Structure formats: structure tokens, C-alpha cells
Amino acid sequence: FEPACLQFHENERMVKTASFQQVRQPLYKTSRARWRNYQRQLRPLAGIIGYPLETPVSITAVNRLR
Image (cartoon, rainbow, N blue to C red; front, side):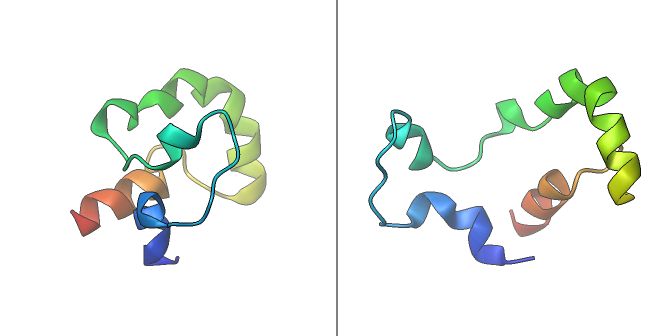
């Protein structure tokens, strides 16, 4: 895990997409559990890679660093 991934919004590299403004915003709590809306669709992939959907790394890592 690369801790700098959580500070992606601080990267000054040029962004050439329609969502360039979103790229510059930090992670926010309102999106933390949105993955659950897709839990049924994600379950087969999670099984293939051996990843438990109940504790997503992104949320755990973000909470640990805040």
C-alpha cells in the first residue's frame, strides 16, 4: 500500500479529463459505503481475488490515517 495514494488530490500533475475538478478533491465520507450498492455484483470478483467485501481496504486505510 502506498500512503501517497490517499493524498491523490495534492498531486499537481495536469489532469486532462472532464472530471478534473473531482480529481483535486480529497476522499469524503459520503461515498465511503457506496460500494455496498454493488456488493452483489462485486462478490464474484471478491471471491476470485480472495478479498472479503465486509472490510474494504480503502475505507480501513482512510480511517487509519485520519
